[in-house]
Length: 163
Length: 97
Image 1 (tube, rainbow over the protein chains, first blue to last red):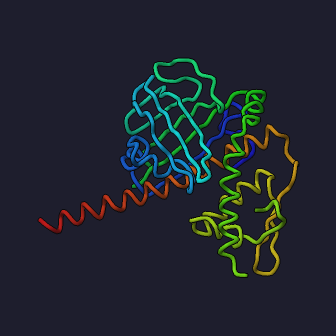
Image 2: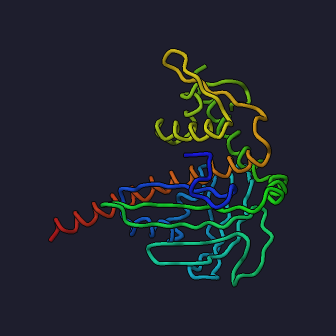
Image 3: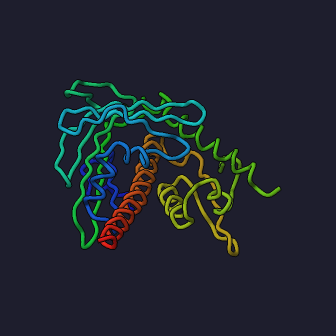
């Protein structure tokens, strides 16, 4: 990983790459079958509910995450582009039918998958709005939720730690 | 956890359902982002938080990276397991014929 946005047009882009032993078909299933997606979308002990999954441009993609302490994270959005077995683009900046949205966390994610040898290559580009928007989102307390989750793990670990 | 002071990697990794090498990768991301510092004492590697070194905006992006890196790791693990199961199923079907 580099801190330099080498392959990135914008300093607020994240580019995440993985090589998999599994083929594109398995990768595509994990992303496009809600029952599979919800199994890896968020870290345990949080759980994911897929409230809408309409896999076509303008179709709703809505996840709702719930933490062990009752904390929640509601993430409505919509798909922008779908290329079977190759690409999924979605955003939180619009909801179903391209309706404008003011999300607590603004981003567009461009997920690309391609064959690589016997396996596959996965590239996620996650684009974010400007810093001012990000700061506002931070104030809305997203990280409080995750930090609560980590605190709970911490407390659990302490109960397991040898005295 | 690090908010209470420096900890060894094994103590930090304990609550997570994750292999140590995977956990080390997450720590490397955090260290590269300047959120933590690690040093080796004998056989144990210790981590500590670097408070307020980054601006809020940089911290925000580093946190987003951590969220997506971890999500990608969970996805890879899930997909490879899914693929192994599919392969085992295909092999099983062939044997029955």
